[in-house]
Image 1 (tube, rainbow, N blue to C red):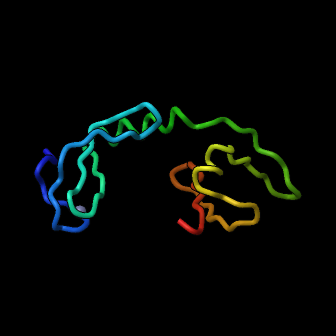
Image 2 (image 1 turned 90 degrees about the vertical axis):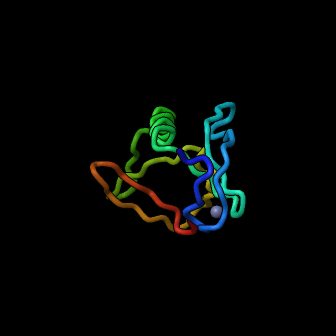
Length: 105
Ligand SMILES: [Zn+2]
């Protein structure tokens, strides 16, 4: 389906089937643009990746800080996103979920 199609990002390269490692040791079928190297996934694979990431979520207890409640961000995520103390993040509620976005991303 995506094989041989034009890349939606650069609109120049063609997509070629590759195996992409989304998590250590877990490879999925992906389509890589020959020009800008952007990697695309089919809807089906995308859903699998999302389900996997949800299953990967780490449980944390909320802690009280003054009048607010704080959640501890797991070290794995801190490392992956290179987060530092006092860094600004944006927190919003979306469909009953809390979304924390690092300001530099
Ligand atoms: Zn491209």
